[in-house]
Amino acid sequence: MKTQKMYEADDKMISLIRDNYDILQGLGRFGINLGFGDKTVREVCEDQQVDTYTFLAVVNFTINGYRDIDDDGRLSVPTLLHYLQASHEYFLNFELPFIRKELVAALDENDNLARLIMKLYDEYTHSIQNHMRYEEKTVFPYVERLQAGESDDDFDIETFSKHHGQTNQKLRELKNIILKYLPSDMHHNNRLTAALYDIYNCETWLSQHAEVEENIFLPAIRRLEKQLRKNDVAVKISNMINPGGENSETLSEREKDVVIGVVQGMTNKEIADHLCISINTVITHRRNIARKLQIHSPAGLTIYAIVNNWVDIASVQL
Image (cartoon, rainbow, N blue to C red; front, top):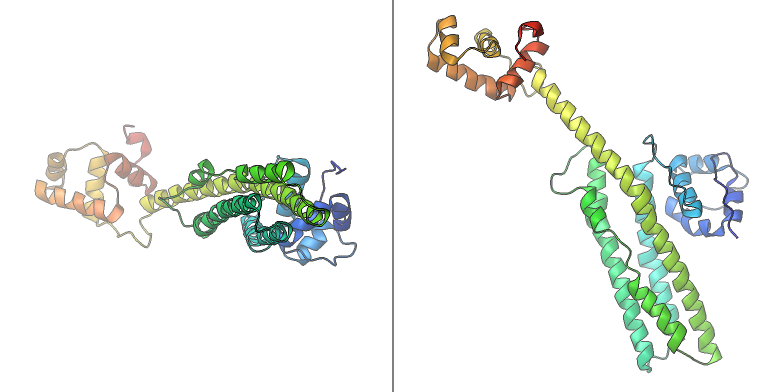
């Protein structure tokens, strides 16, 4: 029976595996190799360049269902990406093909029911492949762009989340058929039992994989998206109020006078009379101001004038 202990960074890695041998199956997905002696979880993770907090978050979640994760943003998205990508590699290139070989060896290819079993298994495998390939082609590159600070107007993680689900229906049908309707001689029965055992394990591991995505990966990406949106807003505000930015042009003294007139609530005619210029010249100045500052509203110009100390906020009607 599995322990319900909550593992910490100073626990021995060997103790964690001894208590929960299923963890062996997931170590490679983190890039952790065996042969770590009596080192602690922290020491093993640091030696093998794996984020300790993220490793323990996944381990404690899969073992004990511990969900109080990433409340302070400590999860390592690169570590999660590596874990998920390595999981795909394991399932698509090893586990699923291995089970298929077991089934082929255990079944009589001339039996109609056996052919149906193989058909169901291939359909199930195809659905898993489609799901994982979609993540590899769409979701993972999107996350990598987020990490690079690039926003994406055409996709967000909620789009993936709405269509994220397990594809276990065909696998359940397959298990039921094997259990209920396929008697065989002892030799083939042993092979089929072994294949069925691996199918059960694979179902459990795939379910854990989906739950890690749902409960750890997706919340971490939502946090990343939220932070990027905050940064985008901060940059836009900074660009708006910082006349010394690379993409801004310095306003002339006359353009500053026009901005102050707008902030004080003057019409174009009043600004023209005050500055002894024509209305058309005022309109031209305002067009140039909008182009240089990328600010097109009186409210935006008011903020710009206040932060640049051209007007006193106390004198502005808000």
